[in-house]
Image (cartoon, rainbow, N blue to C red; front, top):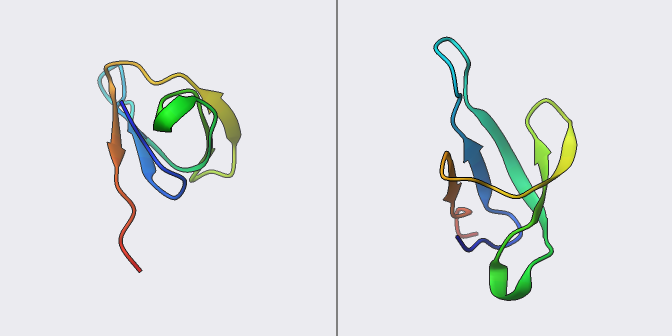
Length: 63
């Protein structure tokens, strides 16, 4: 998995009724765009994320 600052990280819910967690990647700490990513989620929470197979990177919209 590769990402750039500004991309969106979507982590799919694990149980029925649990929504997806969505956030913006504000820092890429791995080499060449690899995890871990520092993410600011839509609820304002920030955390260091090592995404698993339930996560998807959505590229940022070009400006």
